[in-house]
Length: 227
Image 1 (cartoon, rainbow, N blue to C red):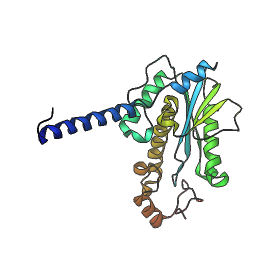
Image 2: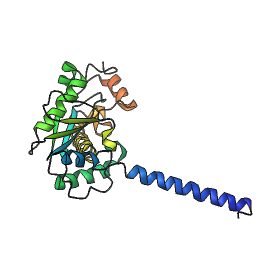
Image 3: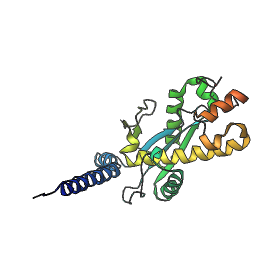
Image 4: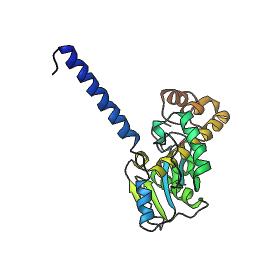
């Protein structure tokens, strides 16, 4: 029997802590190989996760990655949607993935082509290039949100796939690390814009640089706010 208000408060606090801990465990356990294992059960051998980064940026390429995981090996600790990880954690996981994945590759479409064919088509093309660049030929695709009708392979589009599919999350990290490093290098060529800090996204500092200096060759001229 709970005899005092203090006892009740202690019990309520303990219950709240347990609930929060349970929620954290559930969030951590959302990333899995369930989709990959199902595809292998269905008879496929090389299941590639596919994701992109940089779709909403004002400058730089849109980059996609494809990754075929070795499901017999443990997943990298902390594997998750790249947006939920620190830069240091992404770098660490990306290096581990490069050692343990059966295959991985990137594809990119530059700003001038984005302006010419639009960002959706450019995203699909970057994904297609990543898939084609794989050293192992994928026979099933798990794609974050998009369908790639241009690729004659069995595939499954998963909304927010980078939060549930291990191979899509892996692709998101590889693509993010690759693109961030690329934008840091390009920042040395175009130092006025701060690409090494914001990677081409529409930050306040980026818009201020655009107002002051105008667009450079890396900018997507068709995007609002660039010109």
